[in-house]
Image 1: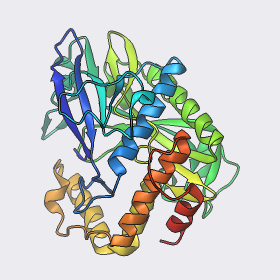
Image 2: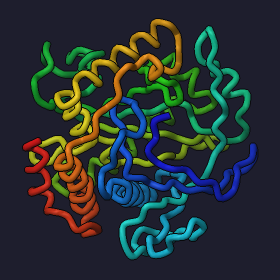
Image 3: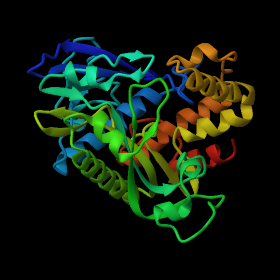
Length: 346
């Protein structure tokens, strides 16, 4: 998997009970499903933890169930430091987020593909739903939706995609795989099968509720919330939001017409290291054609490190964006307008 968060277990889950654990947000970043890149972005981990906790607490206020259990005050740096109840209780931007832990069954892969029947047969009264639920309010440049659907398919009265972001008349929800080496968008029937006991309509309604909370906050703080995704637990028939929601890695935002998310790094690499980007695309195609899960084994290039000035701009984007979104000066960073102008010049 390509996660840039470390994962710690405080109490193992059982088939009947959730466990306890925590995410430790690192300064690693990942683009094009590569996993941790060869360098890091300053303050990225604390920015994502802070913004994610802020959103989880907003979701709780809105009545949306989640696996969030608080954050660890950075003043209590020990591995076993207990979490606080709320973000307001910490002395600075946290790096650790406390969560409920569910069972994640093994997903076998063989000649016939991934065995979701075996995955669900191993699950007890709770499990991590092996789907990503994607919601979209806009279709920015770089969105995969542009390669899979025509504007008319999503309610737009036009025949071609414009060379700028376009707003959708209503949010749309899509489903993609979570644990496969290469993510796939799914039709309703396959998504329903992969979801197992989790009801697809419940997953969709949860995604729309999350989208509403984040979109409302974004508008309050001068952002445009373009799209995002969630992951979910199924716990005795209830859907709960898992992983982290509403950060600049999981979601795409814009500010003053400028993209403000991990998409900035994706687009930068397309011009900065095009040989590696092309090699990744080719490797994924070969792996898909041969039915091999590990596409990176076919990739003959490795990514270059970012220039130092780009790393600095990216770090300020995460920090200034978190300050602006949460309405609190967690980081010593430029104002949001200055940070956005620097991103615009990359």
